[in-house]
Length: 300
Image (cartoon, rainbow, N blue to C red; front, side, top):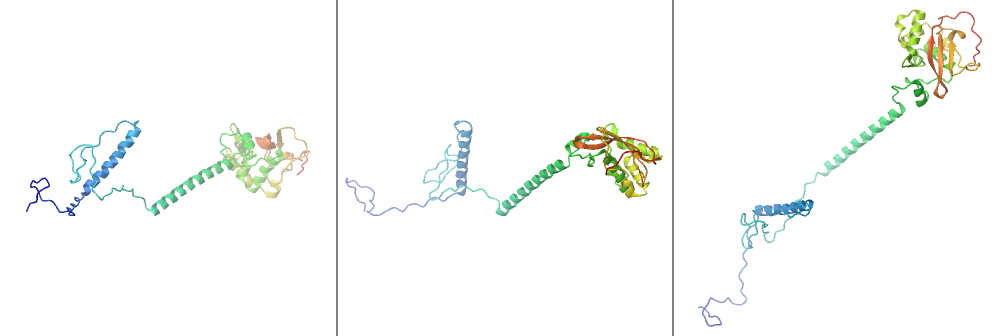
């Protein structure tokens, strides 16, 4: 039986007090719609970034296709423009996290980088040390080498501190078969190639064509002519009591009693930086001295 309203007119039934209509369940959630909303948020963030980079210019409207649907309806596409899709009740968007590399891979990468840097640093340090202790002597004169290298010749021979000692070392090295050190006592830069001059003089004295231009071959030949190594090595003194005439001294082998091997001619020795002496000239002399040596008195 229909009840009447207060105004006396028939109407619909009045629900009794305390009764309630059960709420309708939320519509099902479409994962594709959630993904669309997430992409829309990312697009908005990108627009904000570009707007800040371009001097706060108004951002263009977002792409059509994402709209706000009524609460009672699921989100739809192509129903409007410039509106984000609705978030269903009870759901929260969580930003996707970037995948991180495994810890072991990060640890390995750090170790590799550390080893590479260590190798580079060691290589640079090694190169610097090598260049410091073994500088390149190309293009330098004997005087420059004596000044920069503490008296080291370009073949790493140390100059003598006395002209007579410089010549004595030639005899000594020939007696001992030290070919490189014997030739290293002679100047051989530019037009002053005294090593070749010495080889040519020895070849002419002993008629040895194989030693005409090669100092090493000349020294090897002279070593075969030595009959007593000890006597020959000490044929010349390290110094003499007579005062030196200047920065250039001429030393004739026949001034001294050469024994145990052949005489080596006449040497011209010049003083270079730091009080050291280099053989800067050579002339032919007899292979066997005749007569008694002259008056120069040895002191050592």
